[in-house]
Image 1: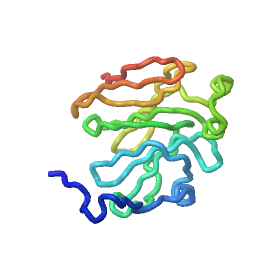
Image 2 (image 1 turned 90 degrees about the vertical axis):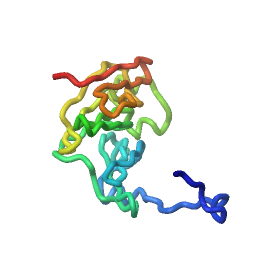
Image 3 (image 1 turned 180 degrees about the vertical axis):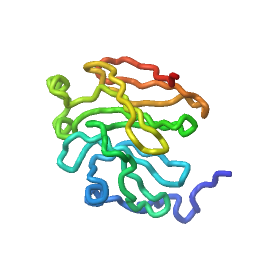
Image 4 (image 1 turned 30 degrees about the horizontal axis):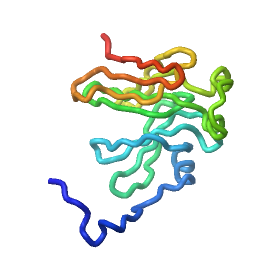
Length: 178
């Protein structure tokens, strides 16, 4: 059963904890956090757009779900995509898929179409092994794709989903193969 906040605090929300940028840098060499999902373990997984210098880096940071302390990077194996943005996971199929937006330094001053040709915007859906946290594959959606929001079907056993692309306006279907 769901219940509202106690009457004494319902109209006085407050912050529980702020995860400072310095902590993200020190414990994960990441910056520009974007998408967060609560995991079955109780931890919180957050995708990041880049590193502290404003370069692209498709990394993830893991927070303790009780204390909100930064535990460190989620990914393992040393191989990390050059860009990051959104993600969705499907443990039943042992997979996490992530997308790529743009280099944080390029995003600061707004969208410049010339930056697409310079490689400052993404074009891949990245496939991760859920249990080992290792990058397995990068699906190239083509120049000017800029894949953003990615979702599996809302069926726990589904091995397929969709990703919407910003610049091309395309919606791509992805699915598991043999």
